[in-house]
Length: 153
Image (cartoon, rainbow, N blue to C red; front, side):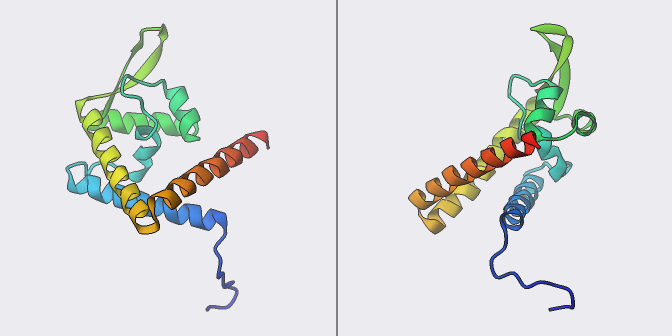
């Protein structure tokens, strides 16, 4: 151990959450690249993970992902240039635009869902299906509570 480092036998929630997030992102985007989506970056997941098949407003994507509208706008520009999404007028409000996945975007969304399902299945097998279901329920409860707390401050 180097000077000034603390030894942590029990990593805190932030460290564990980061390990889980970054580990899943690495596996997801490496697998996607092997399936022909090598032009995507993990940052694109902030949009793609929250995109509805029939389209989503950019402001809703920003809200769902917790990203600033400017960040989402830049990612949308990139994803549009790569052929994953297109912007269309919102039929419910002609002043607004919907971000709609293209055929390539829809295929990527289906492939991502399958990859995540395989990751989850592997973890459920490792710890037991009931334990994994309990973990997800508790993790969701904690994440929701933390999100609410973050909004209040």
